[in-house]
Structure formats: C-alpha cells, structure tokens
Length: 273
Image 1 (cartoon, rainbow, N blue to C red):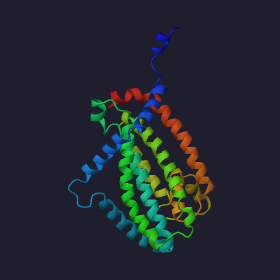
Image 2: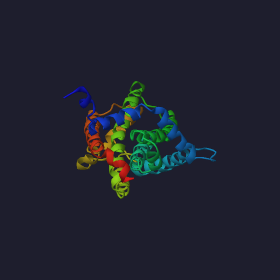
Image 3: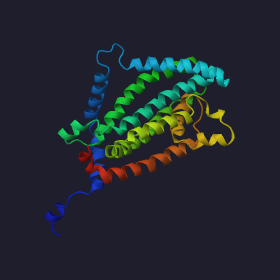
Image 4: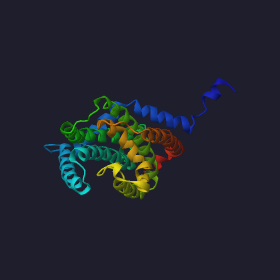
C-alpha cells in the first residue's frame, strides 16, 4: 500500500473520541468563559449573586444541625463540621451529575452552530458548579474555624481527595450526558436515584451511628467514599483505606465505561439533539 493511500485512511472512532477529550481540555479559555457567562446570566441584577445560595445553605445547616444534634444526642462540635462539609460536597456532586445529563441537550444551539469538542460542554458545567462550590465552602470554613480539626497536618490531603472526586464526577457527567441525550426520560430517573442516595449517605448523620448489618449502607455507598476523601482530612481524621480503594476502583472502571459509550455513540450525538 502506498503512503498516499495509507494517509487517506479515516481515523477510528476511538481516536476521535480521545482527540475530543484531549482537545476539549486544551480549550480552557472557551469553557471557562462559557461557565462564567452562565453564572453571570443566572444571577444578573442580583445584589449577592451566588452568595444567595450560600446564605440559604448556611441557614439550612444551622437549623438542621441544631435539631439533629438534639435528636441523635451528638455534640454540635462533632455533628456540625461533618454535616456542613457533607452538604457542600454533596451539592457539588449531585448538581454536576444532574447538569451533566443536560450538558449536550442544553448546549444544542452551540453544538449545531460550531464544531467544538463535546468535552467543552462538560467542562463548562463542571466549571460552573466549581464556582458555586467555592462560594458554598465559605459556610464550611466558618464552621471549621469555630470547631477546628485537631490534626492539621491531614488537611492538605483534602486537595488530593477533591481532585479524585472531580475525576470521578467527570466520568459520571460524560456517561450521563451521552445516555440522557438519547433517552430524554432518564434525567428524572437520575434525579430520583440521587434523592435516594442523599438519604442513605452520612450527611445529616454520622457513619458511626449505624451498627451491625445496617453499616453495609455506608460501606457499599460509593458517594460516601467520594465524600470521605475530602471530608475526613478537613475534619482532621485519616481517610479509611476502603475509601481509597473504592474511589480508585470507580475511577478506572468508570472512565472505561464512560469512554466505551462515548466512543460508540459520539458521532450520533448531533443527530439526537
């Protein structure tokens, strides 16, 4: 076969999918601008902007913390730091997954008008929620200032945990975006599953409160292990080994599954919009 004929061979769907992922990550100027515009558009003519969410979340954390502390017989200094971090991190995870379902359908005009990597629209949603997460973390930091962790040397590990959490959220958004573009009823199912996960994840309660067989709810809860990678260091406690195993296992298996779907159905996404 001549060199000219071999050069004319079209790239495979696998290489196109990985090129899409790489090219999207190489355009931070685009998805940073789009995500920031989304925030400005959402809170236009608002005096406090995203801080309205911070204030409402702070009021919810304070109110529920006082009630649950009395109901469960747990000291405020033990429950409130764990609960505030849990709510803030859960909000980041659940909102990213929910908006990942609509990452492509919500960007339909842009997808039809320009040839940009699909990854750009996922990064747009992720960046938008990271901005809101930074605002909400103010509440958790205030709580931690009142009840500081004992082992400060563990706190930097929270940054590693946050990176791993975002990497896991990334494949969840990609998988949800591809499937929900084809099946428009699935976002409601995803929202229902997330609502169930919210109640069975130790957010408003401590994981040590479940004993016996009920502790399986915590041990086999993937969201709990993702939360714990960030929450435990900020509380000054070591991250359980099982949480590291779960998170890395989800990271590799999840990205393998998400990329398999993306490779298979990437070229069909514009026709499903």
